[in-house]
Length: 318
Image: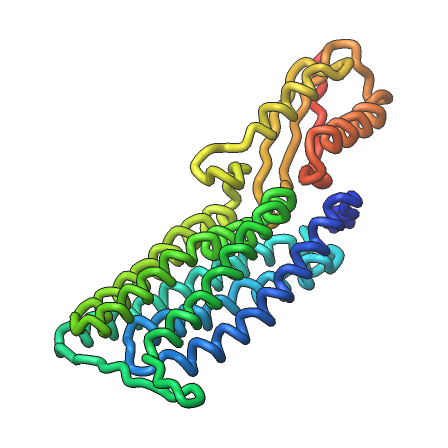
């Protein structure tokens, strides 16, 4: 079996991929500073410790993306005749399972803390000659952990939609919603300051449930992509993409085509699949090569994502 043709990305796709790699590099560097800041400021607050562990998980999506991106760029060979484009979806699934596993641990710790009735306390530190409540330091750390993350989430939206990268899009959605985690942790710290000890554990439980929710939602989408699902929209994962119908309609307009059926499946950024064309009476087999070229050109006009479809021509019986 011959491998599929090597994929040569259009210039705009190359530009979006380079931008995504830069943003993911910034994300890793920023996450390391957040982990250090939150670790120093966490203190006895369960909500802060939970938010700190969630911040550690921020490293998983960008690292998974960069590893998958390196694998994706390897050309098809005899071992992987369809290429390694699905590495993107595999990375998406791995990061989703990491969220579920860690979220479950955090949920257990939060419920245990609430059941035991542990009452955390926040002391004070001296900054120069002034005494400062440590809660202010925690809020400052939370602000640093949230504001740039939300900004990066919005910045990742463009490349994720342009590349149709589900892992990247899921990561951007998580970052955009990171303000909810920060707000919950801030409320938990406020509860300690007001003497409402249970608010800290409740905030930790909310954060852990948010982590689990993200993991379950993203794992379902990753499973669908790995199970040869038909193309779905990137912004609305419940609605099929209209690429299949558009491709079929365009093929039916080609000279000599009576009908066409297209089956496509997601493979990372790309769409692989089959095209079955019923030719009109009078179309000779000598014209097949022209029809093959026109089909490839038609696929390129519809979307750069449709890559090297397997084309079968069916001639009517004489």
